[in-house]
Length: 204
Image (tube, rainbow, N blue to C red; front, side, top):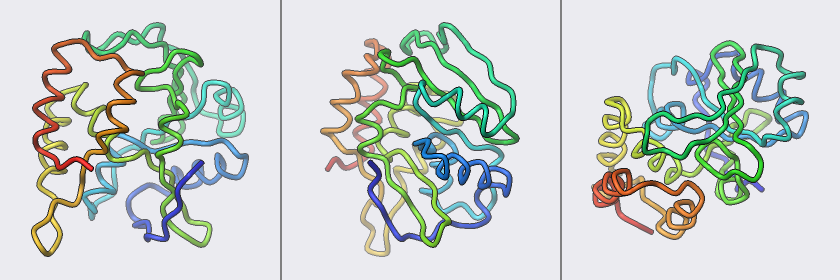
């Protein structure tokens, strides 16, 4: 399910409580993947800890996650903000500074941990200290759809990332993006924004 990498995970990036929660999910075989702000912080190699972390899990695993992690659980049916995102029912689980989200089974969208998202997620780390992340394209797509001021800043910073040879280090997986768009079904306004964002990244 996960592609593995032995890249080191910065110990400062997520809180001890969040790491404990993620380990519990993994110990109990509940697949998850970090996305959005926490993923951006990892991709940018941030030196400061993130304020919170967002994770996606399967809807059928949500009750188990709530039992294992505790915290506060609630539902939004449907989630309709912003207007050009799909109307998607979402379950939320708040545990400290970790927010776990699960869309409805059979209702693919941004918060549904679909087989496509799982297949392209990546496990980073080694020696029991691992975190699962969505692929960069997923976070770029989510940020382009949300389009808050912070999302625009994050996209700009991701697009500026370069290696020592001046090559862009964060790319868009074109095949994944096209397949994912079949699941999230953006409207014309959001698709127009995404078209502009795609020009800022090389596609692989």
